[in-house]
Length: 163
Image (cartoon, rainbow, N blue to C red):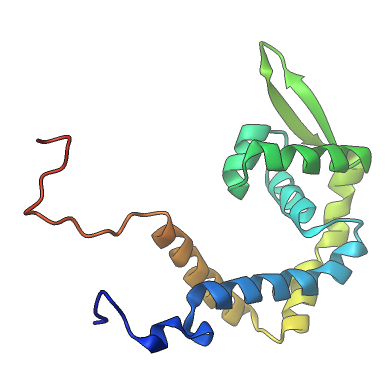
């Protein structure tokens, strides 16, 4: 186990998980760019469309929760998708604060064109479906772990709530 103070090697860029994840993210999303341009979508817009192809309509909050995006980030994406003619945004009857996002016929039809994206990306990245699934499982576990506080509790120290 590494000491709390760590070692000089712990600070090598090549050993940083955050660096590897950042570079992998930029690289993979960059590889998607030309493929998604054929659909007239950016990567974040593609994620919104994937969520809507699974279930439509959805509330902005539901899309936000599904994609782990704050509504303020999602709003401009939805406006652009609406301008492209892929989605509609309508107030929910009885709840004027809630916005329902649904697919237009054009947005629904775009799904057929998008069916080739996963296979194209596997080929571009030189991955098999099994390898992609293994990476997905590992990344999902990492996301869940990062969202959990793993800080050890020192039983000899009382917290303010119990003191």
